[in-house]
Image (cartoon, rainbow, N blue to C red):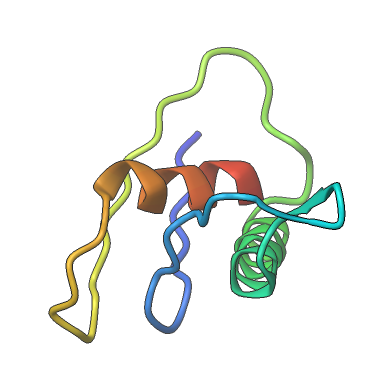
Length: 80
């Protein structure tokens, strides 16, 4: 089985958790992007996939700001 889906907009790299008042939280843009990834995945697949899986990620960014590829992948994988 092969599943292909896209996510509109600029990809958001996983941001480091912030600590305020002794409580850690994930920044809002990261949370929103991970929720968008999850919604797009749910729309593409009715049931969760099981067994051995492989993933190919393509990122298209509308700006030239540098970012860490590992953090781009993390935000998608955490959303899945």
